[in-house]
Each structure stands twice: as C-alpha cells, then as structure tokens.
Length: 313
Image 1 (cartoon, rainbow, N blue to C red):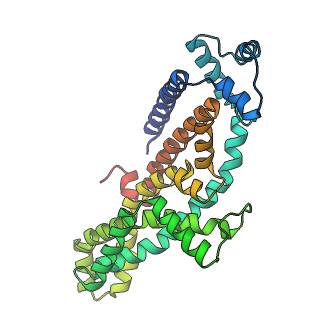
Image 2 (image 1 turned 90 degrees about the horizontal axis):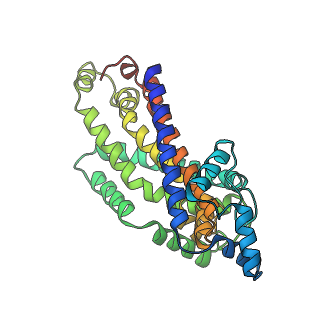
Image 3 (image 1 turned 180 degrees about the vertical axis):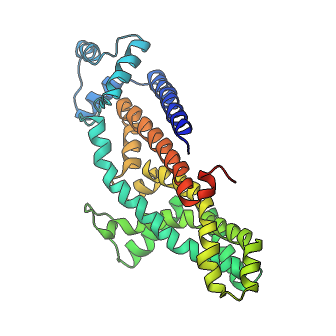
C-alpha cells in the first residue's frame, strides 16, 4: 500500500470513529432508564431525589446533549473513557483487564480452528467428489448450522457434568477453563474456513502452473505444499482479520455460558446494569479494533504477494 493510500485509510478510520462515537453516545443518551439510579441500585442504596439531582449535576448529566458529547469525546481523546457507573472503576481499566483473557481465548480458538480446517480443506479439495470430500462437507455443514450456545451447552454437559473432565464452574484462569470455550468457537468457525480452503485449493489446482509442474514430474506433495498452499492463503487473510476482530470484541454468548471473564461478558453485564459509560467505551473499543485489524490485513497483502505491492493483480 502506498503512503498516500495509507494516509487515506487512516483518515477514513478517524472519520468512522467520530461517526460511531456520535451514534453510540446519542443512542445511550436516548435510552430509557436513569444511569444514576442504576448506579445507586448497584451499591444497594436508595438515595433521595435531592442526592440524585446532585449526582447528576456532578456527573454533568444535566448538561445539553452536545455539551455532554463533546466533554466525553475530549476525555476519550486523552484516553479517559469515563467511570463505570455500576463498578465505580475507570472504563479503560476494566477493558484492559478483560483484554488478556479475551486474547488467550481468541488465539486459542483460531489456532485450533486452523489446525483442523486447513488439513480438512486440502483433503476435501484433493479428493473432490470422493468419500472423504462428502464426509468433510458434511462436517462443515454441521459446523455452519449448529449455533454456538447449543454446542457450548452440549460440551459443558458431556465433559463437565457427565465425564467430569473439566469443572462446570471455575474461578481460575488455567487451561481447563479455556479449552471448552475455545473448542466451541473453533467448531463454529471450522465450517466456513474449511469451505474457503477447499474452494481456494480447487481454484489453484486448475491453474496452468499446476499442470506444468505435473508435466515436469514434480511430486504432488511438493506442488501442494510449496506452490498451491502459499497461493491459497491470501483469501484467508481477510477472513482471519475479521474473525480476530470479532473474537477480540468478545463472544458474549459463549463467555456467559462458560462464565469466562472476557470482554463479551463484560458487555452483557454493562447492558443489564444500564452502565452507559461502559457500553460507550466498549463500542468505541470494538470499532477501533475492527478498523485497525482491517488496515493491518490490507498492509499484509503486499508482504504476502509482491504483485499486489507493485500494483499488479
């Protein structure tokens, strides 16, 4: 990507972030309920109307909408996303505290998915129309069709309740708490990635360079791993970037099922407690992650395929 193109993309990210921040703040501003009452309810106190008015005045909630938005946006530009009403802690601190577990879960599920999807996709493409192909395509159909929450509950019932391999409820951060959520997320992604690998491999296997390599007597394994696989990777990069952005945003349903302390469960808690400051910070955080990852994916194209860097197709 040229320098002018990079600057243009960064400008687009800034404009989109401003738009998302305005919409998010506006929607939470118009949402029903009183965040001040919710804040006191979370602490177990019943304040008087006078105390409620004083708290609103102290938090700046009596100001006009644009004044509140500009004050909040100014604080965000300085790294201050406000204070959580329900937890009485800085929003940035809460998001960063949940980022570590979410990173572990995201990369574990992606690695597990790739270890399964890439070999299955290659097998399906190489044995197109055969028994293996139909078996793999059947598995991908299950992966795409079964919802996350059902797979998660089934795994929890079998391995937690019946077999007792993993604890049903755990307060630790060990491998036993990570494996079932990672398997659940990997199973959901396995179907579409296996199909994508199969499609990309079939397209490459029909290219002229593969026919030429076979005519020159090059081993089939060498053709597959040294030539076809590198050329098939590029279409997966965009999907991986989007999947990583989604996972880093937190997969709320899976995290709630397994009581996993990630960003998704934090967002669910913020919604149920009407913690508008935390919701606003979370949405802005996710939007930034998505756009930065998309930018990094575009930049990686030139490194993976020099033809794109030179302007070729």
